[in-house]
Image (tube, rainbow, N blue to C red; front, top):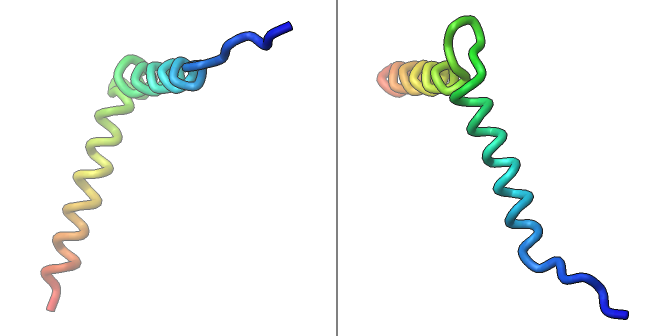
Length: 57
């Protein structure tokens, strides 16, 4: 008896996980804002602080 073919199964699993993450970032709202907006603000604040730190003598 031959084993069933499982070729490409991991790609489908990664696709499902990635789709779930995208939904969490752009669909689910936290306090009236999406997760992507919170993430963008955090990245913006990080680079603002980094720029300030690098400008110090």
